[in-house]
Amino acid sequence: MKMVARATTLVSIGLVSMAIACGSDGNGDDGTGGSAGAGTGGSAGAGTGGTAGMAGSGGGGTSGVDPSKQLDEVTNAEAMTLCQELSDYSAMQLPRSLTDPSSCTVAALTIQMNMTEAACDQTVTDCIAAGAPAPEPPDCSAFMAGGTCTATVGETVACTQALIDATAAAFAMLQCSLAGADATTQVMNILDITLPTECDTVETKCPGTFM
Image (tube, rainbow, N blue to C red; front, top):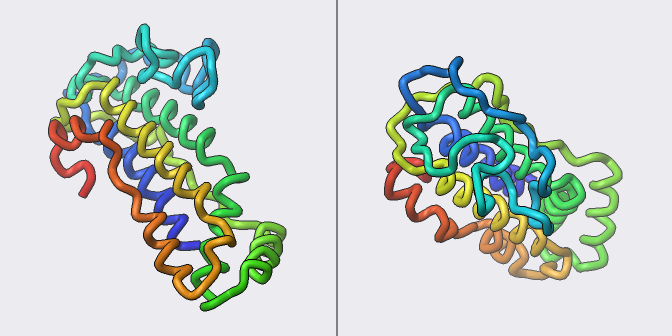
């Protein structure tokens, strides 16, 4: 389970480092962030009727934070709002119905060598029934602005959502059909998630974000 937990943690780190650790002069009390969640007017996922948060086309999204605003200009209130919105997106794209089977599948395939697919299926079923540990969301109430990242809110959100989507796609590939002599290698390759191209700009403008 540790491999899947690590990938989920990397997403959380991305949320924190991109949405919060880059900020402004600390004028956190003067920014109004709107509603922290996904709100109305389009779901936070990939459904129709609007895209998630600030990355959506045609405006600042449900948070009210200007997508063209640089992260070194956001207030503490805006930083917390961005964190919560991205955390909500992560929770929607990486639900327990996906992460629990993925965690259990990784455990089954990597703990016992040469496990058969049927044995893996039974192990995963038992693991889910026993209850997989829930990932811990970031505590957005504790996040403060303050940094030198010049990526915009829109660029940051696009990068973070793409990273979350890539993680979700990788988790969906973790199946007991991978069972066999090279199962561990296949699992490791799947969880070796390539940084999405949407993050190129953020990586350039905010060195050290993806250390």
